[in-house]
Image 1 (cartoon, rainbow, N blue to C red):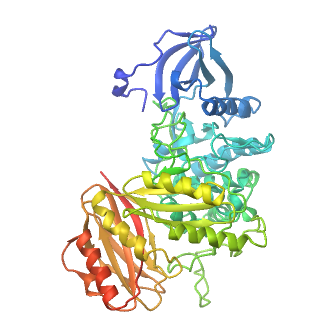
Image 2 (spheres, rainbow, N blue to C red; image 1 turned 135 degrees about the horizontal axis):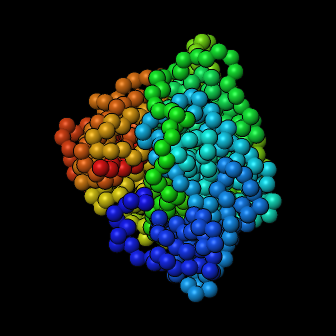
Image 3 (cartoon, one colour; image 1 turned 180 degrees about the vertical axis):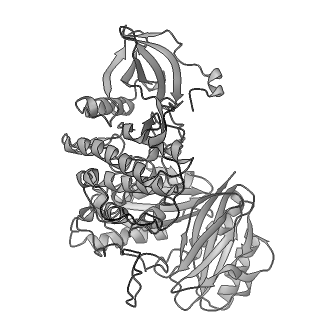
Length: 601
């Protein structure tokens, strides 16, 4: 929402001219969300512009919302830095009886909005990096971790990256005070820019190094104009963070630094101080891919957007169940032009990282047979197989974790219900599920808590009723993760008509069938698209020009099953009934894995 958004004409908030504590006067609303509103105000005595975050009336008695406001004010009140938005006052307006935060008004637009026009030049990127890193370094020196570093939370006044401002410390955590987040204590922010420890790896221990990782992803986006796809289901969030992402498109001058920033193990990452002090060395080298874009350092016109409130999501189920791998929560953000979620995941004491997956063909990980790397490509550092920060499990820890895993895989929640344990320890569990309704997952959540003594984090991928036969099929043959094929996708959300690229792994010498279950419940065989590679099968799938959830299934069997290769689209109930019947008649053991893809306009 921008200052000129016509939709605001129907907005009903605190009217212009209203005075707050006799200090500020409201001029216009510039954003609204699920937790509150953001106004442009002027200081009555000086006329200076001020941004004010104000809680909605029905949130005034919400202790969690109030705590988030207090935290934002307390964390940054004594943190003066030119790259961090300044906070002036936290108080309650006596007439309206509504708490509010007053802060510096930043007349600019978000880095995210700027990158929609193209990538930054290398020189602009370096200046932006030094500017933002110095601000985050100052926060880290005061024991404050941002935990939601993203292009949406960097505002650029006058399109001059040398004046960039970091906003939205509302979910920041003070390590000095030793407090916990208001809901849970682990992850809050946008999952595409989350660090490995924010999604369950390396003991869930969030430190200043978490901001370093997120900022590395921001820099990749700013330099290439394309963000790395690090989102998806809970399983995919974890898997994509087990190795350094492919940095082949990054300018060689800065690639070694990004490789250090994007190390999965926090202990191997650079510090924010090192990032802030980094300067290019050596002769300039051409980038690995063309970097066309604009140079914000050469611009002089002012931006048109003021700090804005980003739109909220809606919460379903319990606070530990999120729909589509995301809990929608308490939202009140300043930023530019994007939709943002807060996702809260509990601190998982003792949550162990799963063993590294098999190496992918075509990635930056060295192949099994030694081969010298290309001269123009620097290989990332080899990662240890075990995280150094993971607490040692108790002697019975592995046995208890295995019992929890067995409980999850054997739990029955109905015909349209399928769950898989993504990561399990003796005291924590991350679980992914598919279903047409969140109700059975609420029931499972309560049963799990009663049986195991703690709450699991359950991610629900909601399907259409017509796709339920595929979910039932997965519940029958997809629980054996060790033998099930593994699907890796280039993206989990695409626009209709775009191409989905992916690979299938972990099938050994078995026959693999690739299936697509549309939102209408029709099953198509896509096995003809599979192309053999090194320990994997690859595919490029043009998506239909429709919208809604699509299920991609990989089925592995020791022999060809004719029922899995039907030449025409078939109704899901008929298709999977025929497949299971043929497997039972021939005493053929089959396993399957599913992935969820959302098509949008």
